[in-house]
Length: 165
Image (cartoon, rainbow, N blue to C red):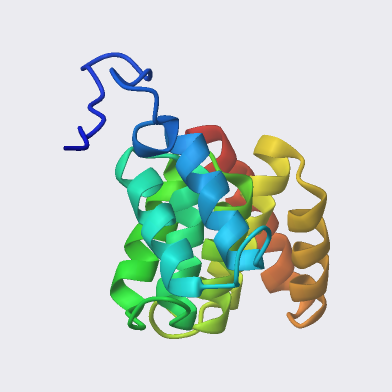
């Protein structure tokens, strides 16, 4: 009879050597392999299962991956509210790409009515906090679609947001 691996509380090491069942980065990595079809057939459902396990442990990249899965319906049933909640949780955990995704979702109106000024303010906050080049490019592109006054207001709000987080 096969014994199941159990993680002891406070430890990342399993009692039986099966790291993928307890270690969130390994679970996330297995999800990436399944999603890309590396060493196995490409399978979004299997990838989502691994991402969900790692997200359950609070792993930021897995939270973002699950948010994207729920947003696109890849491997799971599309659910915008779950996508938004997971994206926000990943952003709160400090995942810069999740912060960018959240800002762009707000700008597009994926979360509510389109609010490009608020989305731009969030992008500026990401630029100020982590200096992410992807956020800088996205902010520059979004700012070009707004009038200069709205863009300057978003920049001020973004600095304030970055200081308050």
